[in-house]
Image (cartoon, rainbow, N blue to C red; front, side):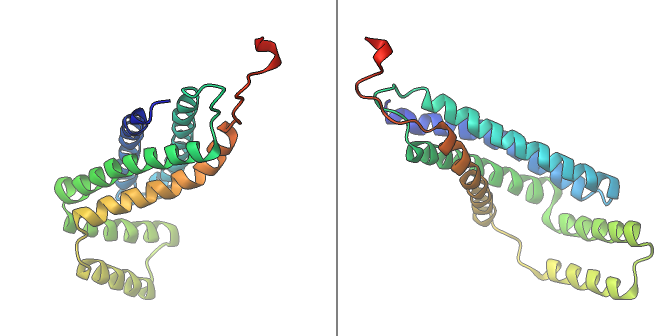
Length: 193
């Protein structure tokens, strides 16, 4: 297995995974900003569906990578886990960049905060009837804190995407790398003679 192909494969698969996860993040933001309890339920379904797709793609990419190594080399847990983390890191860069572009350039960060607070107020009103005065105080305090907080930078947003993707990749990677690992067979099997 060529080592130079490792980074090319990881970048290519990370770009595919990153595009899928970036689309998911944008859909999740749209659903979250809707302020509808029904769409919040759909948000849960969407999250679970994309988590399953995330796992499937990581498993598929790692399986394809493991097939590149011959029986004499084997495919160790460490090789699979390193590959998964590299794919996840590349995907995280794309997800973080897409989130920054969507929240800061498409929507506008101050507009995003205003819509988030309005959606939260709407959901609280739908689930609990009229928002009580104590809840209004909590929501207004949250709105004040969000408005006063510094707008996240490009680097902070991209790093957040990478970190989130590495956490998911790390958790999924333990399972996937364990399932796909196989010992080396330098002398082949008895049936190959």
